[in-house]
View 1 (cartoon, one colour):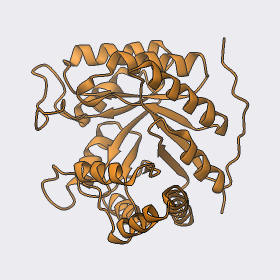
View 2 (view 1 turned 180 degrees about the vertical axis):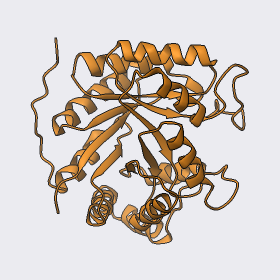
View 3 (view 1 turned 30 degrees about the vertical axis):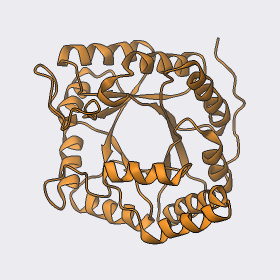
View 4 (view 1 turned 45 degrees about the vertical axis):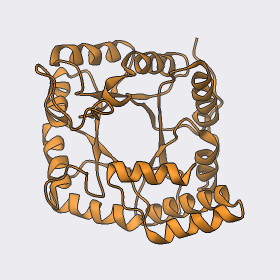
Length: 289
């Protein structure tokens, strides 16, 4: 089993404590030489400025290849493209283009009156700028909560690819077959760009279950039972490492060449899983002056 390429998702800090946690995460995971790292927006675009600051630091001071998140929420087209140009000026050559989630408590997504209606429109506009080498988009192996019908998620991904997306990163899932079925459906639909599986190491099972319910990720009964048993004798971390490592190994055995980890700015479980897959630190972390 050859080692896959890897990438990591971080989120921008909103407090001093969170800032320390982000840079601890960067220092722990950057030596593993990720293909890229992504930096999220908060729901409703609430961390837009913090995201830009984190992106600039990761690019200029750490020399990482950063894919900055950009959403359609709470901004007009001109403002969104201005943010994109600012990313490009900071050295960013990759974007994760998403519709984005509405602010908490506001219900369904409603486009800004002068904004992009969805990720496909955003991708099309970004592609036309010629500023970016890669445009990543989201993908859903399990049905998105707003999916109108079976197969709708594949059709939406095809629309984004036709608009100019060069690759996709999936929402997290718990079983390799979930990804393989989605990958096969994408191929049948004529989607030829790379589709990277999104991996969520399970730091807190009850929190992950709530997250899964919100985004439509199927929770297997066997996994819920396993964590219930592990909680009784304090083996949750051991189980989490084993489950995530096995999932990644199954994906690699099925031909996956790139894994994208949602770190939640908690590096240790992700690092343990990556090490278990045979990926050792390849570079010394040196801040770029």
